Image (cartoon, rainbow, N blue to C red):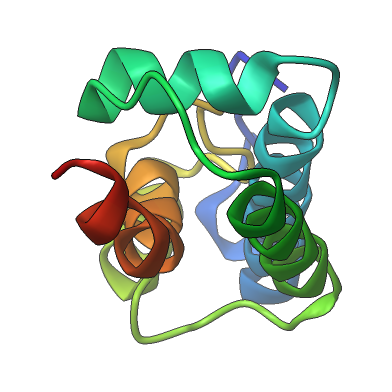
Length: 116
């Protein structure tokens, strides 16, 4: 999923396909965070959090699992959908900043108390 997939004819780029591919990329990013210590490494690199209670960590993992099951927030991803449609590309890059921004919304309720 790390490279763009172009389509020959702009009329053939399906918004539904774009949305589905964005959801898949988002879920792949979440899944990578749920493996072993990846979540704590991410929190340390992004937020300088070196420790999180076991309870908060489990709740955070649960919230990430729920996000994976949820439908895509089309308002949040509207700019990416538009960009992919206009660029005639149906697959986003997995490191698109919108994925991180969506995760930060979830992390905020756990990292605020951990940072102090």
